[in-house]
Length: 177
Image (tube, rainbow, N blue to C red; front, side):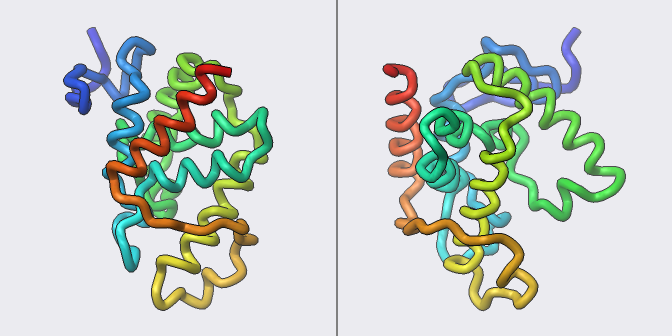
């Protein structure tokens, strides 16, 4: 008996986000779902996907951490992107973070990633977050201004299809190496 209920993925698979199995995790589903999810819960001046965010995190990390950076938010393909204040709130946080951790452990095993993730991945994630906030949150709330150091990146604001394709292109490179 599986825990929780299932969702149907983009590729048509029944996937149990609260009881994940490696055979239910597919890179195409991750890339597609993340390309359709908007960062900051949609509170941006323009559409900006989680998939594009993951590509930028990938791009600023050293070689040995790039694949982990690309997949650092892969659980959101199955659990959705959750704003940090909600994700970390008392009561809700324990359940959500436990589900996210279980799912990320399965994803890490499936794609042969270090788990828990290296702190440099979190630092890169926060640097890209700061850049995104400065570019996409208008006007930027004063408390955001110096919260994290920004990354030196451009945000091209890809369409969902382009974000999916860029995500898969980066992934394909790592599978060939």
